Image (cartoon, rainbow, N blue to C red; front, side):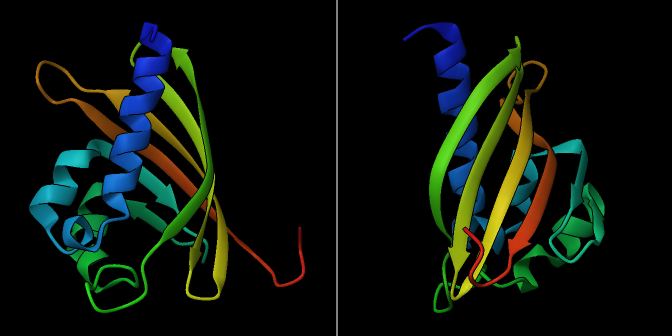
Amino acid sequence: MDSAEEDVRQAVAGELQLMDPAVRASPERAGRLLDPEFVEVGGSGRRWTYETMLAELAGHEGSSADGPRYEPSEISGVRLAPGLVHLTFETLLGERRTRHSSIWRKGEGDAGWRMYYHQATRVPPGVD
């Protein structure tokens, strides 16, 4: 596996961790996977920052062990530059289908890979 493939693999692993209810319910665990400069434009159009996401993530759908879980599919990625990866994928959460785009960057020192930017777009029923 070359370094570009390894970078994509690491970003995908981080993305999957952020879909785990145990990680989503823990601001500490989720905080290790989000870049301090993190920004998200959610499916609702709301803009999230590192602080607002960590403050509210535990209350979002997909964050409870006994609730619906994210079911990811079609995850693919490309290394844009050393330490920078772009991922695209779809998820199902209950009946809600969403398309996602995220940018992951490698942190300084031992920080590892962290999500820097995320965009979610809900897919209306009947759309391919």
